[in-house]
Length: 115
Image (cartoon, rainbow, N blue to C red; front, side, top):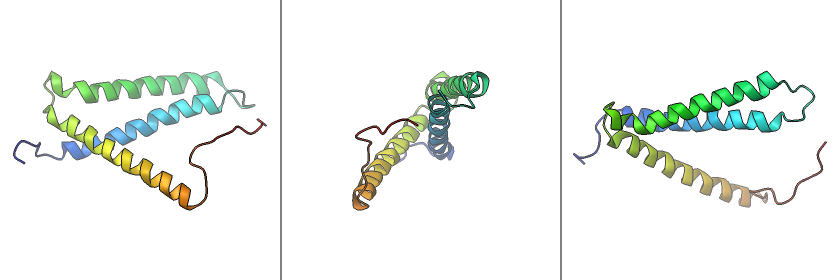
């Protein structure tokens, strides 16, 4: 246990990783959903989400390589990524089981007609 990081930075990094993932996926979802929508605006629904996604990607890259450049210890982001991965696996298993128990499909198997 003495070899593990002893700070709250690991907890902060693990929670921030989830936030980075959520924001990045929200930006991509905005780009996909508003294509062909009557209220589509290239600035609001394409350029700003692309900038947000790229800025978020830069933060996630620094999140990984920052400790190797001397900011903090190397073990903290790796441990935080491990915590985030375990949480993601647990969430996927829970979602799949809950969907199956409710009698719903987890993944879309066919596309309905577009409106």
